[in-house]
Length: 141
Length: 98
Image (cartoon, rainbow over all chains, first blue to last red; front, side):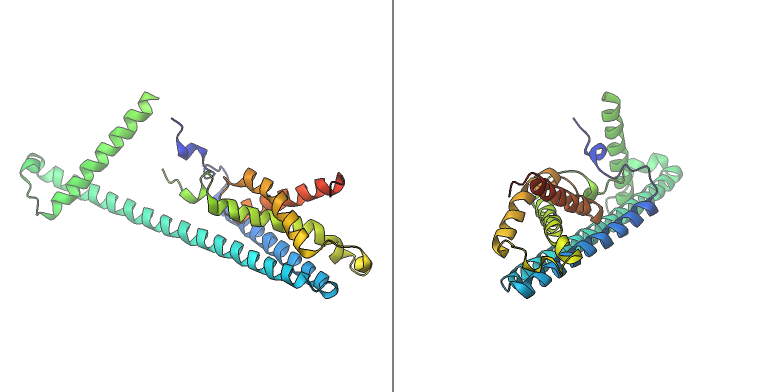
């Protein structure tokens, strides 16, 4: 089964800052292209008035492209924020569970479902299971 | 494990539409650049009607959009669609197909 992570475009060997710089340059180039096209249609519309409709279509298309880009950027940032939060939470839970496990290793079975540590140990166990599954999948390959 | 779903390959309708629009702009750029660089001389040149130009751009850009529909919507990938739209129109002009 192909792993989607290995088919993405985020396996770049270049530093992130260069990627962001190229993205910024490309955005400027894209805006230059759009402005040039609208300006060209406008020049044409001076002689053939029907082209004002083409100007309107081009402006509409430019808006759709820019809104789409902005929406993608916002969604990507939101996903990154959520991932950071979840990773922080998992790290904290594992640290707490590790501490609890060190102090009362034999009391694991008797822990109450209402105790705050219960969910931390639960998350720790889930994470451990997930990592185990992942490792076994990698081993199988 | 830090896979960003917005940077993964895969076709989707929003991607198709975005790249289609970008390719249309590339097509228009090829049509309009002579007008902008040389606009005093091409004033009397015969021009297609605006709707046939838009329809033609929409049709050729479909090819570019089908090819690029699996790329993410980032400025870097959109520029590639613009270039493909420009190149398709240039090919058609060179071959005098339209």
